[in-house]
Figure 1: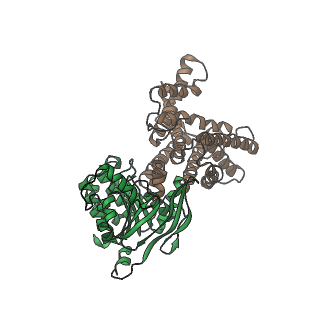
Figure 2: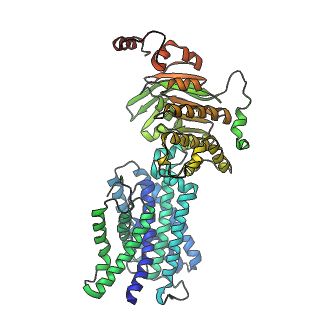
Figure 3: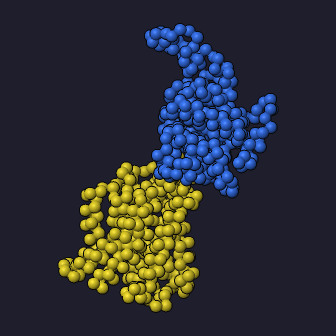
Length: 295
Length: 282
């Protein structure tokens, strides 16, 4: 019973992280209708950048982390301006191919620069685990849950009240109307990539601190797909809910598998089974609007 | 309430100058869609500061295209001004991106209202002020509510508003940008006669109170000429007739084609057709 509870807490925490990455994926999709297959690489690049600053330059975490975020912001803008802006107006399949290409390129680049083996982060917190309600939970996970909730609240505030957030929603609704209101659609696109890269990097660093940094991180991006599609490609709330569902499902599957089935890989594939089942009933996801393009 | 009224009103205030300053001038422009379809062929018009100018014409004459050429939205539809130029406030503005044109003070209220359906009224209004950085946005929201009290009562999504309310929201959104010139595309479209009256009275009111210049495209020629001080009549991408609103209202051809009636007794359909063929302006 204790194991089940532990796994549920884990699921919640990991699910919140999935939710954060899924949100940043949805952000790009909503603003520019691009399905970004390189989302996982944003985590990877963010984690490696932070790792490099912390180990190679021996910077303390509270300096290295903000630098990482600033770097990812610039990285997102540059990527959008250089690679994706020329693709505006091209068929959706071409744009998807470009993001898949980016994914492969960045994965290879990271392997070339930092090697293929997982490298651990230097210890960041004084004690690696802490006790929450009688459970051993990694400190970084608790911190990550807090950060995830903060980011989600931040997204909510941003889209509801800030000037740029409203502009992004307007652009997602109708680009021509947005332009007629004086919104620069190019600026909104660049900004959505910047925020998306930055937020993904936060998740990347958190996972990197727990598991060490390796190219396995970009698999996170793949896991986010069921979360996003479950919630509906264009719903930010759906992304969070989808993320939580996938996180919990994984850990439930792990529990069932370890107790009775002993297949050994249920953890990885269970979310995808559930994804197929849900899409058979609700093809636009749980929260998605009906006229979206499916991939 | 009224002290919220802005600097633009002050500019337009010393009114009784004999010759009005030309705010917008469109000179002999040619517009091509998709590199092949010629829509406007040498269109020229002038909009004096502080006035309402009507742009009338049949379906497909190029009225909306003219507005989009001015606001730059043509770019978003694969259209291009290939000849002539558009000057606003003494500056040439053709070829500039639409968001930059909004910043210069031209705001288009597009045909079909085009409010953002999945946002609330308030959010739509705040988006209207997107280009502004001054602190007067809150006061201006109150000002819009003063003109359109019923928008204040609607707290739900704008998509659920009635057609008339959506038009009011679209006009209110334009007011929030504090533009010098509003391009209004068919504000009466799909509205009940009573609502059309209300919308037009508000158009006149904001023109008077805020000193905003308005270029008005309309199918409802009678209402438009009542509100406007001068007008242009377009056909097949050209201006074929222009004059003050009174001149146009009393012009026999305009009566015949746009205002209905005319001074003769009703013709049979067959006669009308041949008449129309003879009297085409092109």
